Image (cartoon, rainbow, N blue to C red):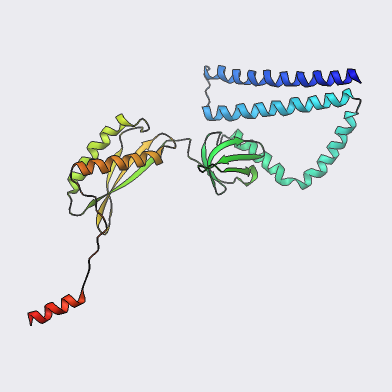
Length: 272
């Protein structure tokens, strides 16, 4: 009995050592790959490393359990045969599970999204925390963690692959000089790349976007690195507001015209 317990302890320690060394080997292999001719994106690298580490852990622990059962003289072959028959029966009733696993495989294989990406899918939006073969974990900007079965992921919008575009609309009063406003804005836009590293190039003034009830709307677009379009749009609005104030160009505000019928009747009587 004491010899069996000793073997179990040795198997457990050996399994722990294999997992630790295996994870180190996986990470070192990816480090060497960075210096090779075939490069992969950091986001995909993080996803593959985590997936390989989880696969290694499950495989080693499964083998360790089998070895421990054999140590205490349990017929593993009979158990596996029974488990195979039971698994076949369960498989017919676990179609959703199979669908989740197959979908998860293709998500990883096709690199639809990776850990750290900001995506929108299945009515949820946020950063990908983890991708498994069965579920995907998405963390929203409010801190909520959504665990979504891969089988329910039918459409995905990935915001983290390509550069984003920040769109800013700025209003100028009808009484203002539109040409002067456009010149002032273009001068400012040329200065922005030196201040903000998020910008890929000089923002572009497209021109008059809309004629409102009390304003002329000018549109500015700026190409930025992925996921920086929201913050960059806020910064550009602030810069535009300050520069237009410095040049005395008025940004309109809602105006209300009051009409008094009593005053009009009084004027008509006086005229008679």
